Image (cartoon, rainbow, N blue to C red; front, side):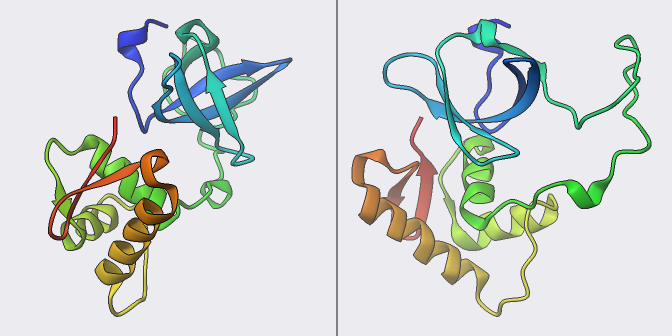
Length: 155
């Protein structure tokens, strides 16, 4: 793959030993490359070169001809790991072209099926979680506050 093809918040296939694993790109690394998270183990992975990535990750498909572009019908949706609120918010903000407030972030997360909640105040909960990450991680935080009640991602 080429460097310009790599997009933050997308999931790519990466060869690790004999296995191919899915890695969600979280941010660019200051030393060059990207910081990702293994979708199966939630462990952080540092990717120094785009050559390590094979392409977009698809759920494990056995006995599939690589020329077939149609996804396998036996993919079990119950095995798909649900996103946490902060990760879903990060993905929404990474795709947004402007800073967003928490009610809008929550609306987009729910509309895209990334997150479900039964809480009475999900926007307040998300605002608190993002603010807490900014306070605890400082310059290492994925988020930045742009104005009162609005956030963006640090790229």
